[in-house]
Amino acid sequence: MILELDCGNSFIKWRVIHVADAAIESGGIVDSDQALVAEVAALPSVRLTGCRIVSVRSEEETDALCALIAQAFAVQARVAHPAQELAGVRNGYDDYQRLGMDRWLAALGAFHLAKGACLVIDLGTAAKADFVAADGEHLGGYICPGMPLMRSQLRTHTRRIRYDDASAERALASLAPGRSTVEAVERGCVLMLQGFARTQLEQARALWGDDFAVFLTGGDAPLVKEAVPQARVVPDLVFVGLAMACPLD
Ligand SMILES: Nc1ncnc2c1ncn2[C@@H]1O[C@H](COP(=O)(O)OP(=O)(O)OP(=O)(O)O)[C@@H](O)[C@H]1O
Ligand SMILES: CC(C)(CO)[C@@H](O)C(=O)NCCC(=O)O
Ligand SMILES: [K+]
Image (cartoon, rainbow, N blue to C red; front, side, top):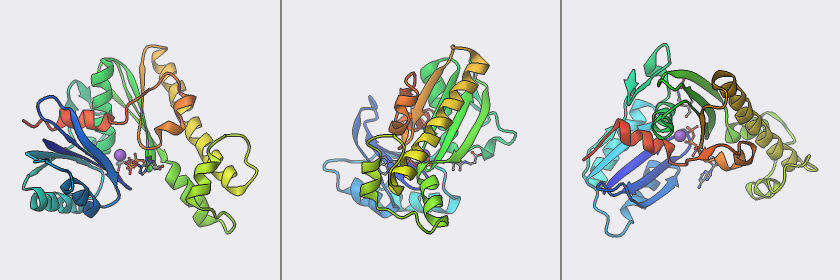
């Protein structure tokens, strides 16, 4: 079994999969390296033979995580690195090393699944969109604040926006105009995310007509799912790309 990690800016998503058939044994989401090791170590009858990682964190943080994993599970983690071209996809950045690895791997995964032009919308700490043409050319993309950043900017820079997580969750039962602060903020930010997604779809239509696939991923994908009914929701899209960039056997 191998351990797969997607280290985002706020959370680490992890999975343990079987090498032979890629069947998922277990998985989760944690907010620290220590919590990760604790959760994986607590799995009954799991013996890891390898590990692969994608990280958008600093090299120091990623190295520290690899060291921790080596110590806890006696495996040497493989870290995905930028590439100019992989699996028929050509990195569209002027400097290919600057493209976020989560975006690159999601683009690889999407093109692999779509076998044609595709739009990837990834809603995490940041909201990201990436475009890959039918010939595998990555055309670039967009980065905006995601739901957690929009919310916290409002809370930080205003005096009178204050509410707790439980009321935030309740507020999202509807998207009608808010009749309280929590409803107004939470629903407003969701509409921003949906607007982002719809605008990306318009861009893709202008480029490719109706001939493209849309993929939706990231922790906040459920918030825009209804606004983009044609999208395939693939929570593991980054892991699809990770397997392509770091084959282990
Ligand atoms: N079990 C969960 N734990 C934490 N966040 C969750 C969970 N399920 C959904 N979410 C939502 O996912 C969002 C974080 O998404 P994600 O995990 O994709 O971010 P990230 O990978 O840290 O960020 P980025 O990809 O931008 O670096 C949070 O805003 C939260 O609302
Ligand atoms: C945009 C984020 C922060 C999203 O996780 C990540 O992809 C990243 O750090 N990217 C580097 C900058 C870029 O992609 O242009
Ligand atoms: K991520």
